[in-house]
Image (cartoon, rainbow, N blue to C red; front, side, top):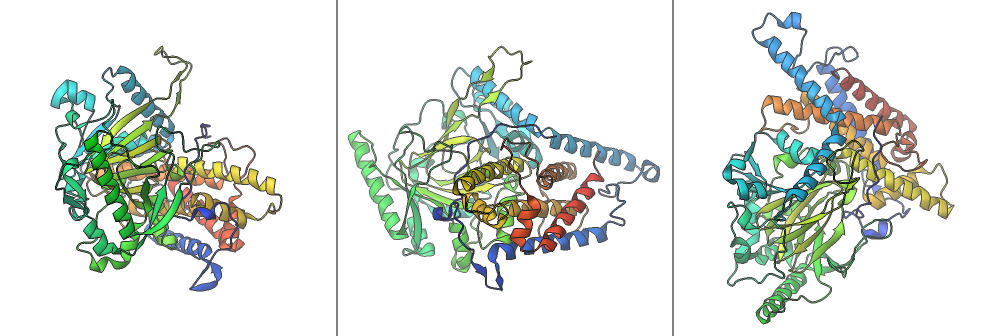
Length: 606
């Protein structure tokens, strides 16, 4: 039975969709290849066919699927293996890794709680107000070094700790759901985009505001380049040449700057900013004029921006450029770092939607900001600063204490916040459900991805359940949507947060089958392994993800509402599947496929 968790505030509306779609019951466009099917039904049917195809291939690889006892890398009984030197030890080690992965999937809530406790303890023990966040330095070979800025400052280089694998990075930050600042990726994954989107400044740039107390500054880490921010600006000529001056871009106008009130409504939902479409050339002119004003006011000592600052955000630039990549100096412009891969969300949308994704470019002048929010779908996010400087204000989630805790610090940990400065060339990892504010101290352009993995898929499911409950409450007030109209409910859910239950079900199912195929050595559409990890770390990472996704799939199929308090609301998975697929037979096939996948994973549970 799942442990009941507290309800988090809802996330921002889906940035991949028009805000006017929210909770509307508009008819879907028809897919051109099958005029009788809505586009979403067409894509979900394709997802089902791919699942069935992969399962057929997987069955052929396994001699007897129904009697399989969890063959992983040809695990055999001790009697059969005893004739081969060292094989017994290897198989016992494999079984030990399986047990570790299985327990990791069972104790994920405790890992998150441990991450929060450690963050609060670092806050409480730090008299110098250095924020409780690690700096992870990545060398050119892909090896990870992490250090606490406070530890580095007080303990010197001996406080460095080597992270030997991608799996260890995920355990320390993704599984524990705590933020970190990453340095060094501009030399590898973001080398091309950094060289093309930057140019040197002919004068010192004025910052909008001074870094606040309690931030990670260059003084905390000798690996940073203090002068980089003041010498580098956006290479606007690149955008004019390769994007086009007449291209239309979505500029958000936000009157609610940090310090002037919250941007959350009474239900905890991030409110929509006013959005205006303008030509790229007009946006470049706006930024240039604004920076000139900041520079002038900086000389006079005022340093105040004008009101109603625009912010080009949620810009699907990479998707746009993919249609014309032949004309670009290099493609792709960047590669996603390995420890941010296994992306269920964007991989699924790329295959089974009409081009949607959660990969954005943010471009804002100094003084622009994103106000208090938590990320859409309770996803993880990462943000790479190509140019500029940001101030992040993280609000640590409140953590309830157990009655038997004896650290003498009261009945619960009080919610706190801390600030971190992100410089040019640095990447911020933002954990799921953490509220945060982001403030551009200089004109800044960044690459931002939201993504879902096995480590936070349960939080995204909570987000769907919360929205389902909210929709049901709203439908009751309307009184004209039939109780059995689940097609309308799925449409409304997608309009609110970009995914519906059917999409979520297939997203988990597709990834689980792909991971199982990789585990059994069956070729998949794409590699899901981590090439930088050892075979043991890769096996541990792979099986941990399989067990987590298996548990999630069971929860969805059982219509379990135990992980979140949403009243008497029920998911009605079968009815939603049949409504979206427009076929009860196909819905039954989807559920049968999922049942067989669960059976396969059950065979190698330790």
